Structures are given as structure tokens and as C-alpha cells.
Amino acid sequence: MNSWFLRDLRTPFGGMKSSGIGREGGVHGLEFYSELSNVCIKL
Image (tube, rainbow, N blue to C red; front, side, top):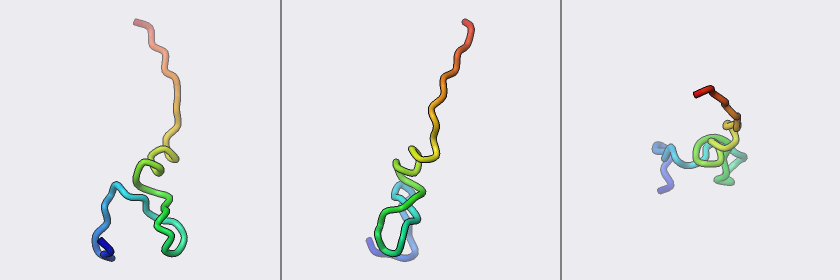
């Protein structure tokens, strides 16, 4: 669980010191880098 070698890609990555709260990866990272947009097409 506390391994320096392995990282689960679903968990957040980054952050400050040993807080465990990251900036990249996980659901929060996906929401941060995503932006909603509307697309209209003629059918």
C-alpha cells in the first residue's frame, strides 16, 4: 500500500508534501482538465 515504486493510475497525483491530495489523475484530475461544449449537427 505505501510503496514508492507502484502507483495506481486511478488515484490523484501531485499535490503538496505528503497530503495525499493530488492535481492529476483520478476523477478530480479528469474533471479539472475537461470542459463542456455543445455540438449541433444537422440530421
